[in-house]
Length: 173
View 1 (cartoon, rainbow, N blue to C red):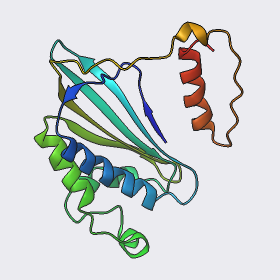
View 2 (cartoon, helix red, strand yellow; view 1 turned 180 degrees about the vertical axis):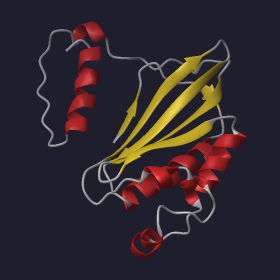
View 3 (cartoon, one colour; view 1 turned 45 degrees about the horizontal axis):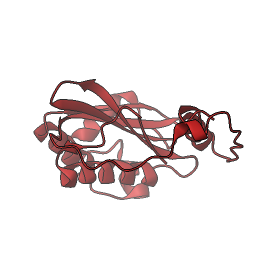
View 4 (cartoon, helix red, strand yellow; view 1 turned 30 degrees about the vertical axis):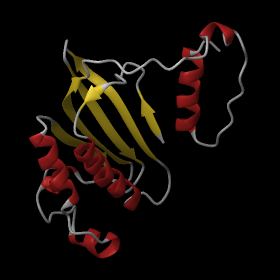
């Protein structure tokens, strides 16, 4: 599931290949270490200036988690939380190192919050230039036509329900 904050700009100038590689590495790890539960990508704005915005990406999972003393090591080459991780889940331990280096090259930072048995949230924030020329406007539905309508949201996943609820409230339902 992916959630993009409403204040995230639609038009900006960045490096989509680097951003895609970072997100691919983080989401790939989240999926690999999450047998049950969910993986959520969240994008929001940390700060905004006239010509730039700092985007904050989060990849949250409900996987196995990482012990506190190992969290700083996972961004080093060929390092994983412990040797049993390599045997059970595979991998070289380079994905997070590559992601860390790319974030650094983009002028950002990367970090992790995690608890064993409760999952992990990998964060990275990067400054991105805002586009000087706006793209042509896409006609939107008139929010007034939705106001006060009722909606029933049914999903067995609480995160999905929360995100859809936020969207419907923004539209005035």
